[in-house]
Image 1 (spheres, one colour):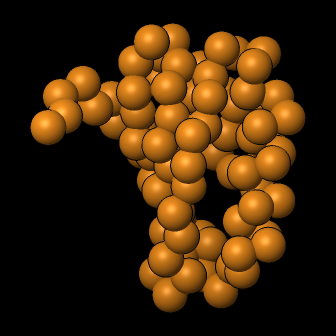
Image 2 (cartoon, one colour; image 1 turned 90 degrees about the vertical axis):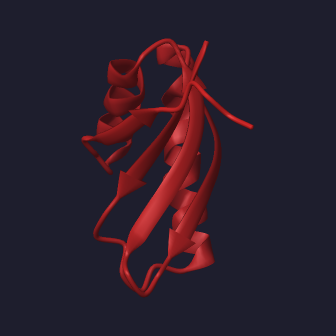
Length: 82
């Protein structure tokens, strides 16, 4: 299982509850692709959301985010950690 960080734009002014709704939309379908979105962080001023996930591939993660309504092409496999 690979680990990924992805970045979403366009979340300016989003609240905690709205971020939770977006995360819940992912969680409802993530198992269909063998993905698990572990955590999401939001900077409401810049509108950026950062997600930490595990899954079989970058493409599987991208499909889940797209189906949940917040697509991104900024997905990075992070294979080295300290």
